[in-house]
Image (cartoon, rainbow, N blue to C red; front, side, top):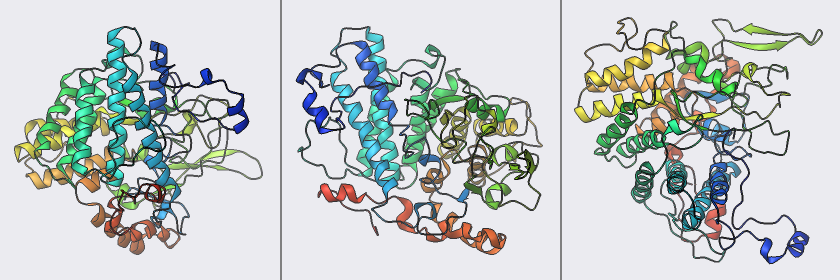
Length: 525
């Protein structure tokens, strides 16, 4: 991570070889008894909790949570036709699904250990509260990732003291969400304001509140359908908006160029997952943002990517031709290297080449770290942007009021005006949402607007599931691609064809089922 210290020490760390175990004196072991004695110890432990959001094997925000773990109607994988997670043909033994579970619980256990020892050292109390608040939020966020992807999961709020501890059964989805809300609301009173930092990789007050709005919107939708939570979502979206700490960056493309250039924009990007380096040194906290979801290019100096994520014509068609977001979110070109001369040129796609196009939000040509690694970079991933908060505000406001209000229109129209390069605060009938929409039509329009604004940011699958639309959207996508795509791209329907009702959640990993006999499997897995 660029600003958060990347070294961490955790209790219970395992040594890599038996001979190292024999050479180690008892006092060399890191345990709660001989650690967590200083503020620096707490900081290092907290960095270890953040570390699990990266996961250098790619199962969290370094790769999986915006790509192969978030298959939706936005994209399909290039040339993947065989049995594979990327075409949604897998079982409960799938490695990446199991590792997602494992990494999330590692983060939870690290947070639990820290929370149990946060009061040990003598230190500044404001800083202690901030560390406690961040740990509480991160524990809750790991549970949000788990419940969102697996349904009810074991709810473990104390650290693992030894490997023989009793296993836990799955808690209900409602109980997991209750714990998430409890931790996040507590964190909201403890964490620092974003103005305390010159970067946005730490959890701050508006980050907690914005994510809480997302949590409440999720609770209001599938599978809980607790519609009273729309009001809570509105309250917390308004907290972020009324804080005065955030605003929309005027240039949409600049948001993502900043990520590639390792620059921070605290106005737009409320919380980012920090990546560091390019995996060529000793630090293993790089990611693949702009590589796994990048512009096709075989030139290492520009920035290598095979362009594995191909966009769907449905996604392309959601944008008007004058919407500036279309040709930034979706690459209008690729890089082609002449085999004879070695010269690389930017080659535009033709109007007919829709399925050839790749994700274009994060473009490696803007990266500043050299040499560029083919597989890793330091580009941050945005978990929460201010435009997302505005769109959550518009949705929650409409659900609470029973019809789109002036405030709901104002929120969505600010996002749309920025997307078209218009003054954000000036009404413009040429781009604003159609006036006079009823509730159902406004929400449909808003669903499409979320797709346009937040394309390829790991939220589309989540949104479709909470709206109860995932199955129908994927089934219609399969028909669309099979019928209308060029013959060379009809394999792009494979993932959509393989999705059934069981895919609303992942299977509980076999590795968990094998050792924890109290855990039951999800239906049809």
